[in-house]
Amino acid sequence: MKKFSLLLVLALFGCNSSSGGGSNVSEPAVPSTTVIELTPQLIEQLKSQPTIDDQLGILYDKFEPLLDRSDALVGADADEDGIRDDIEAFIDVLQISEPKRNAIKQNARNAQEVLYHDFTDKTYENKKTAFNIIKGYERVIACKGYVGIPVDDRVNTSRTITALTYNTKARTMAYLAFNRILSGSASTGLDFEGKYCE
Image (cartoon, rainbow, N blue to C red; front, side, top):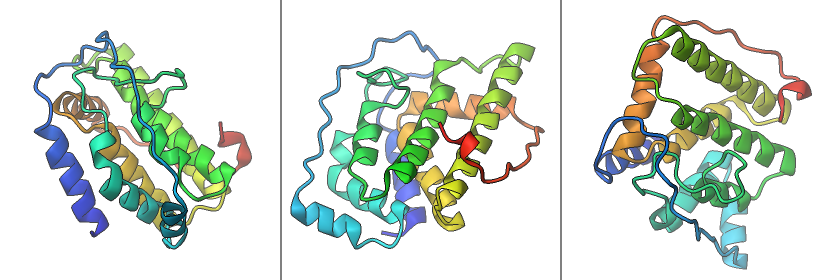
């Protein structure tokens, strides 16, 4: 499945999977039981992929039903590390170095941050918060570059993490509100330095 098709399927399926709208971040999360069994066959299949994003595509293809599509806007995060448990389960089984895994987790944490805020009103505080989230994304990109993730894989893994994160109608609407707040904003790239890695 081509990357574009995967993202389109994720976005379309997510938008039709949950009713409700708005940005109520106080909804309780559903307890997570997301576990991916890392069999020798799965390890071999993941290792044979040329990119991290291709590994994520394999995991999505095999374990898509494990994705959290609950009504809870932020979803389940049992260890409270800022990454939804189902997405973290995908990242934890990737066959990559720990620095690269941590950079992908930083990406997931940054994407999830959007869901902790209500961006429906274009207030100064909301614009400031949204801009800080974008500054965090600049650090994600710098960290990914620092740990040696090639440019195409940096971009594609970010797109996939975005699609996995905003996989319900309510989450997509929250992401769209965040993007509307940022309309007209500009940002600059950072040098690839370890200080940007969490």
